[in-house]
Every structure is written in C-alpha cells, then in structure tokens.
Image (cartoon, rainbow, N blue to C red; front, top):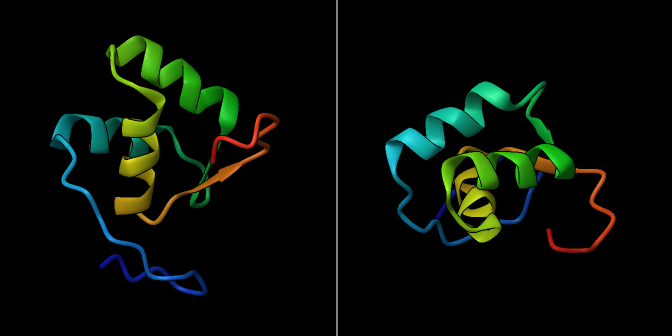
Length: 70
C-alpha cells in the first residue's frame, strides 16, 4: 500500500522504473496536470492508466482532469 500524506491508501501496482522516473521528473510540487499525463503516455508509448499507476506509486496527484479519468 502506498502511504501518501493526507490521501487514502491505495494498492500500488508495480511500475517500470523508467516510467516512474519520467513521471517524477515531470511533476511539480507533487502534482502532474492531466494534459501532461496524456502527453507522457503518448511519448512513452504506454497507457494513461500506467501513468496513473506511476503517479499513485510516487504519491503524485493528477490535477486539472477534465475527463474524470483520474
């Protein structure tokens, strides 16, 4: 379980270290915009779900999601 301050505990799915590092590098103040998440998924050739799983593993919150995906 991921232990993120002030957030519900979630079951963490294993994520490739390269994806996790890219997500961490792209986040600002523990947040990643929805648009940036979609952009990263496209650049890395992975599903948006994988980016979301990486965010969960790194305790990064998706911000400004218009579609309700996160």
